[in-house]
Length: 183
Image 1 (cartoon, rainbow, N blue to C red):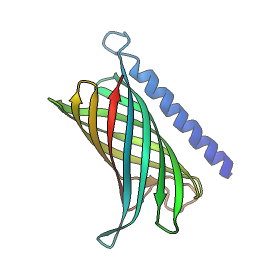
Image 2: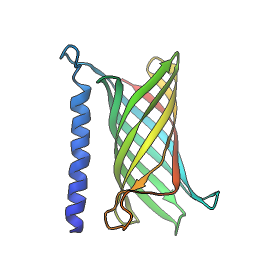
Image 3: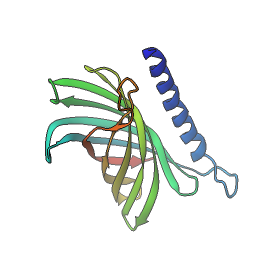
């Protein structure tokens, strides 16, 4: 049963990625290609558990992301993030994560842009496989037309069906700061 859940989750993540690619390639008003540039980002970040009104049990990490921009009804970006992190939550441990994301643009005023969307993925490594989904929001400041600095915050939910509380908020916030290049 455990392998079936893992397989279903992996297939869902692949389907999400393929749908993001297909959606970003179609402009509904003209049925013409509305594909924007590719994106590549390098970022660092972490998360802090929220316990008894205090932040403790921290995690720090590094992320690489490859995405693509396009337009559905709003400008949208989707792609894959690969991360590595170190945690001191229970014992010292290393973890890898792979997430698919989809972020529609909320607004762009001058060099400032905000996106909000979702991500879904898995964490693995020194820990058991763990599936999560999270709403996320980011704020970008464009240094040039194709280079921006960004900050992102997300609130992950645990999707492991083995837990009695499927979809439970993890009582932590994850934050990321990075540099993105469009090409």
